[in-house]
Image 1 (cartoon, one colour):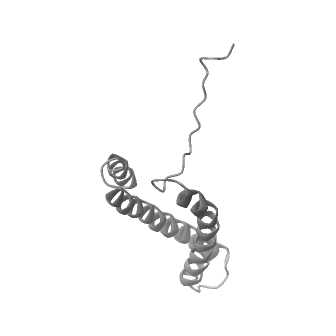
Image 2 (tube, helix red, strand yellow):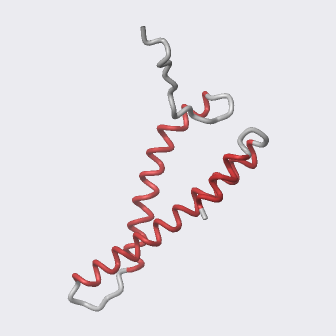
Length: 104
């Protein structure tokens, strides 16, 4: 699912930045929901297996995972936002090109 949305976003980068950002938001949101859900279920299974009580820790594990994701995303956004705002089209150049032809 995220692969399809990522491809759709990349195809819109030259024609419509609005469509690009909407599709990019959708695929990132989809990936985050899937990863938070899987991580929460996995941690719940581990905690329930190690716990002697039969209490359900699912809500607590979900809260901790959401706080951790929000803190990490806030840190990454704070680092990337100044670079994006300086760019003409709000994109950060991730790949640097090297001129290997002139190595003399």
